[in-house]
Each structure stands twice: as C-alpha cells, then as structure tokens.
Amino acid sequence: MKCVTVIMYTLISIHCCYCRQEQSGDNCFSYSNFPAHLKELRSSYRKIKAYFQNKDDNFQVTLLGGRLKHGFKGREGCQFLKEMLNFYLTDVIPAVKAQQKLISSNISKIGNILSELKKNVDNCHRLFNCDMCHCRDSPYFETIKKVYKKLQEKGVYKAIGELNIFFDWLQQYIRMKMN
Image (cartoon, one colour):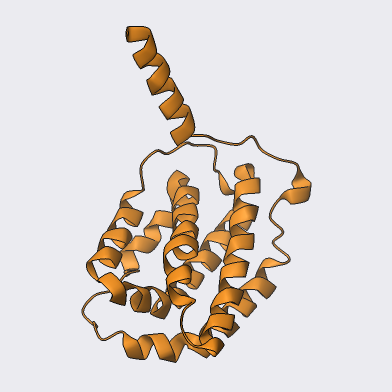
C-alpha cells in the first residue's frame, strides 16, 4: 500500500510540475519580432478599448493593480507571465468572442498574438528563466483570479479594459529579459 501511495504522489508531482527541456534556438523567442507584435496588440486593443471600458462600471476595483506588476520580477516572473497568458487565452478571450463582429475580429488578433507569445515562452526556458516547476499559482496571480471571479460576468470587461496594463507589464518584462 505504501508503495502505491509513493508511486501515486510521484505521478501527481510529475504531472503537476512537468518542465520541458530547453529546445533549440530555432524555436526560441525573437526579440526583433516583439515590437511589431506589441504594436499590433495595442492597435487591436485601441479599437475595442472604449467598448469594454464603457461596460465596466466598477471604478473602485482594479484587476491589474500597480503592485501586482512586481510578479514579473525575480525568478517567479516567468511563472507569472505564463499564468497571465493562460488567463487571457483560456478565461477572458473566449468569453469575449461572442461580442459584436468588430470586437470579435480584434479579440481574435489579440488572442492569436498572445498564443504565439505563449508558445515562444514555452520554448525559451533559459531566456525566460522557466527552469523552476510550480504546482500552485503565484500569489500575484491568485489575487487577480480572486478579483476576476468576484466581478463575475463583469470581470471580462475589467480584464479587457485593463489589457493595456498587461501589455505594459509584458513590454517591461521582455525588455528586462533582453538586457
């Protein structure tokens, strides 16, 4: 029985904290493409920003508060980046795609670029310092998820309305990693 328990815990740990080995430089992040991607993200965001900010009537609450950007610092920065990318790709963007046609096409553009960035981060463990395994969400991300869930259906409006803050954090993080 003890052997089965040990094997079970081992399998759970491996599944929870699976870290891929560093891949070749061919698939790794290209900083030269990042400014163009960021420009396209911001351009698509400007086209939908007013729609979502007008629907967000809870001005007392921020999803991406100022101190949370510290999640990108230190060895946990890569984990926080992955959590934020997953959050927007799995929770926020799919919830928004049912909106008007103009909004849907710009959301798709944003989703595609964030998805490509996520693949790059997954392929570039050394650059992003993703050599650590984490089974739990970072405390920064837990705060974001808690506020998002508290806002219920209006959480999407807040998340998209503050997307520019995430883009700023992303730009600062990538710049820091490239130095």
